[in-house]
Image (cartoon, rainbow, N blue to C red; front, side, top):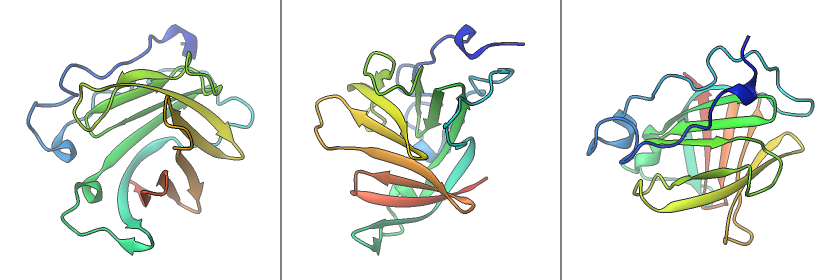
Length: 165
C-alpha cells in the first residue's frame, strides 16, 4: 500500500518526454506516476482521472482549423488525495497539493518549448480543477466533467471537449 505522499514529485524531463523533435501528439507518455497508489480522493475533489482525447475545440464559439495541433491533444489525469498530475503534450505537471498555493503547485516547464519555467497554483472549486499561473492575473485554466466528457477551458482562448480513450 503506497500513500500519495510517499510518491516523489514528477517533473518534465529535459526536452519533454518522448523523442525530441517528434510532434507532441506522437510522443509516448511515461508510465503513470501514481500507479499503485492507494490513497483515495479527498472529500470534495472531482474525479477527473483517465486518459482523454480532444474531440471538439472552439475559440469564440467557432471550431479551430483542422490543422491546429490541439485537435490531436491527448492527456492523462491522475489523482490521489488532493494531488493531481496532468501529463500530455510532452510535459508532466504534478500538483503536489491542489490547495491554491504556488508552493504546492507545479514548478516545471511550458509545453510550448519545454524550457520556459512556470509556477502554477491549483485548487478544486465547485467541482472544477482551476490552475492559476504565477504572474498572470486573471488567467485561469479549468478542467471539469460534463456528462461523459472532460471540458478544458484555456482561459477562454479556447474551450476543448475531451472523451476517454
